[in-house]
Amino acid sequence: MNKIICSDYNEVCAAAADIFAQQLSLKPSSVFGLATGSTPVGLYEELKRRCSARELDFSKAHAFNLDEYYPIEKNHPQSYKAFMDLHLFDEVKFESTQIPNGEAADPHIECARYDAAIEAAGGIDLQLLGIGINGHIGFNEPNTVYPVGSHLTELTESTLIANSRFFGEGEKQPETALTMGLGPIFNAKHILLLITGAAKAQVAKKLFDGKLYTDVPACFLLLHPNVTVILDKAASG
Ligand code: GLP
Image 1 (cartoon, protein in one colour):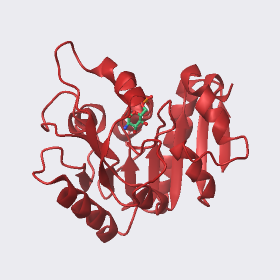
Image 2 (image 1 turned 45 degrees about the horizontal axis):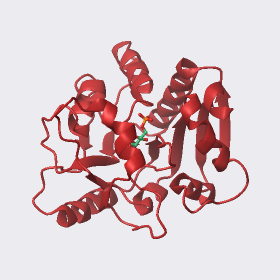
Image 3 (image 1 turned 180 degrees about the vertical axis):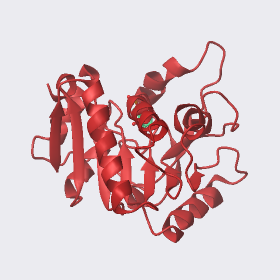
């Protein structure tokens, strides 16, 4: 696990954008695994800036997002589809983008379709991850048993509370989601995990104390041969 500590959030975003740029220069048709949440927003801003300055070009690249609430309408303002359009895809054009379909009639068929699409694209070259305060990646929540493939999952109370800030009063927050499983995430050739803010310091500590806590899903990343973790000072404690 390659660990980079940056002084602040902006530096984290610039360092992460550099890794995206390296990946694109190696392979313009790279397959990127993308994440939602507040953490990658600054990275997406930086990618948009570099694209409009013509320093980067994603037009041959492909994107697969980690997760989506279920059920949720695509045009719901809190859907991850709407989030990605707003923060990246409306401005940065990819050859193709995919997000698990929160409107699918059968979530299990949709998850199998999603895994097959990732495989057909040749797997993910660079997988971006944020982390939940409980250690979740994507929506792989702490558990004793982890489905390998993409699946429908129940969100834990901690995640519902953490993400409730995005939902307005009276707006129903979905309690289930579709998430890429640990299998497709771990098949990525390079994984880039961003951890920022003091609220993540406790979970970051668990990642670096030389033990694999099975109730902290991000700890399984310790077993992957090519992981880069970028933290700001606040998260690194
Ligand atoms: C959501 C997403 C995760 C993300 C997490 C952390 O639950 N499913 O992919 O990493 O939130 O979000 P934030 O970056 O806002 O702390």
